[in-house]
Image (cartoon, rainbow, N blue to C red; front, side):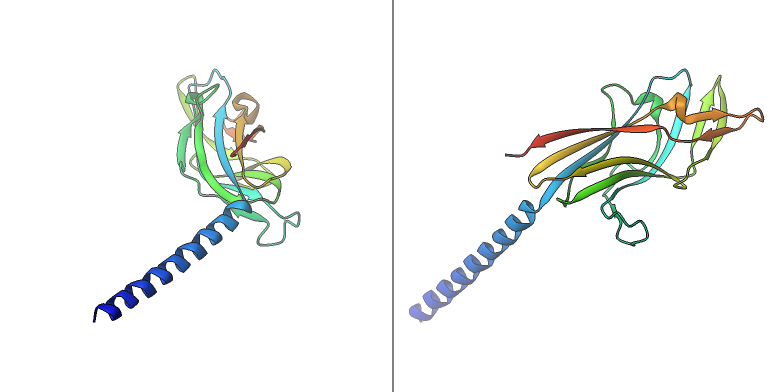
Length: 189
């Protein structure tokens, strides 16, 4: 009886060791093939009272062919919702994507997918914002960067508030997002 217990214990231990070893190799190979990505959003200084922008999602364009359904990679956007960009500028940013693993591939563009709950307050009068963009409800920036494995890429999207909002003579506000993307690269090892 003592021998069978020790044999069972030995077999379970060997099975657990093989399982743990295979898992760690799998995790290691996934890790080597991936990069980490952070995405932040800031606004520029403005005289507006408020600029509320609804963020639905952040995406990376990983294939050149826009018609391919896999051309855009959706990222885990952690701070979805309406944000007043007049509160986020200089060193104070909204973190939209936080340490997400992505394939170490070529990135063509980065895109903010916007909702329709966008407003601006000027001289204490609130205006609903209509989006004017060739990409529909999105703001797209060219990145054109080959991601390298085991690196952290921090993208900061800066939206120029005054250049992006246009008031019409009919007291309407239109949004044509004028953004630029800054990238910082950090070595993980």
